[in-house]
Amino acid sequence: MLGFIGRRLIIAIPTIVLISIFVFALQKLLPGDPVLAMAGEERDPEVLEFLREKYRLNDPIPQQYLHWMGGVMQGDLGVSLRTRQPVLELIAEKLPVTIQLAVMAMTIALMIGIPAGILSAVHKGGWIDWLANLFALSGLSVPNFWLGIMLILLVSVKLGWLPASGYQPLATDPLRSIQTMLMPAFVLGTGLAATLMRHTRSAMLGVLRADFIRTARAKGLRERTVILKHALRNALVPIVTISALLFGELLAGAVLTEQIFTIPGFGKMIVDAVFNRDYAVVQGVVLCTAVAFIAMNLAADAAYRWLNPRMREQG
Image 1 (cartoon, rainbow, N blue to C red):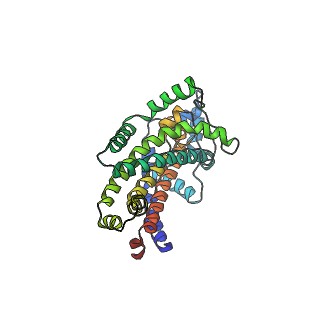
Image 2 (cartoon, helix red, strand yellow):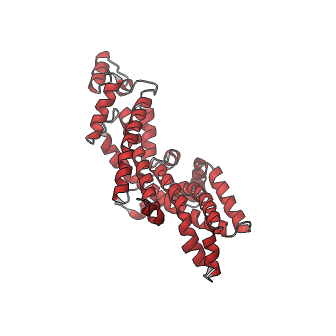
Image 3 (cartoon, rainbow, N blue to C red):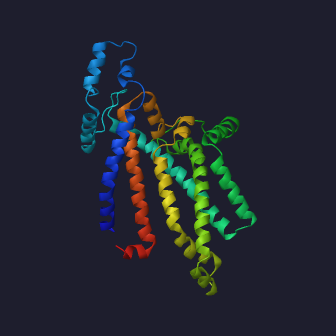
């Protein structure tokens, strides 16, 4: 397993380098001048030139990239042009918020999507299958921003059960923190649950037609044992894949949901950085997001080998 992980990490290095090049190059295509945004209303030419020299914006683009990448290799993602705060500190502040939201949303998605997919496959063509597919279609079709607004109006404004927006750190007040995150996590989780339900249903239908399932039933095993122990275990590989990718997507930040519920996570930070032309923050957040996706893929590959003994034998 360690050798497998080592080979994957070696492959990931050039991938991260290519991503960093694209991130840096595309960032330069954004319209506007970040120095003008920093200078405010008093745009003294000497001040503008000083800022460009300070942040090396007058250097050729390849030289700017090498300077930035050299700092990244040393754990320095640069300094925010807007707040003058190190990007690594900004990410460290927002990362716990995004992780909490991602974990809660993924938990809701798994609790709804996988059981719904299993029931839909087992009762193919029945009313349970019809309801599960209706739920999946609704989850994929309803926009997150509309569902979020409707939940705020109903749950917060009308019923007063949960706070409409804001964020409370988990360490200071766990109960209040969960209350503030419950609605945005539900908004994200229902959409992900629809995707998980469709993939679980498809994987389970394929496995349930296999010969070993018929053999297990012929041996007189209980249907629950056949479904959960034999069928589900063999159907988990594609489910693990999509779950890892969806979790990586959540770590990238749910832009609209965080904006609606005023959650200070990755999504809100990157939107503010784009509008403020804060190059260093955008580059740092996107690079961290890419690394998170690669890490999720590595975790999914490791899970494959644990779930499928034949892959472990291949080395």
